[in-house]
Length: 91
Image (cartoon, rainbow, N blue to C red; front, top):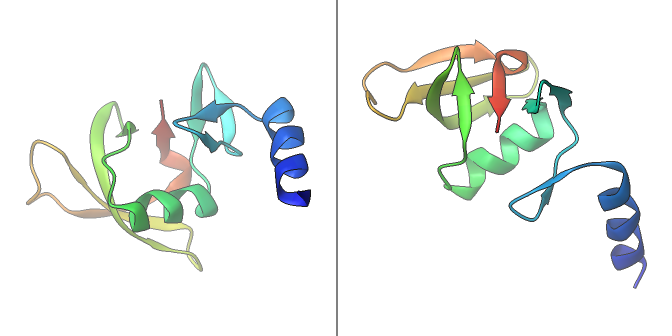
């Protein structure tokens, strides 16, 4: 019951995308990635609508300590790279 109440409160404060409460910083209708959300996406295996420099990417894993993510473009899986989470946007 408490979880339901907290969820309802958070949904009034933060936007919801695909039934997930987004707590990243909004920038022009997009949400700047944070560690918690990036980890959720990486462990889910879902291809979320995430971009890096305007290119859709897949998040392979997250380095919580350095606040970076290992990503690759959806159309070019060979181009893996580590990028700061703040440079990833969720649409």
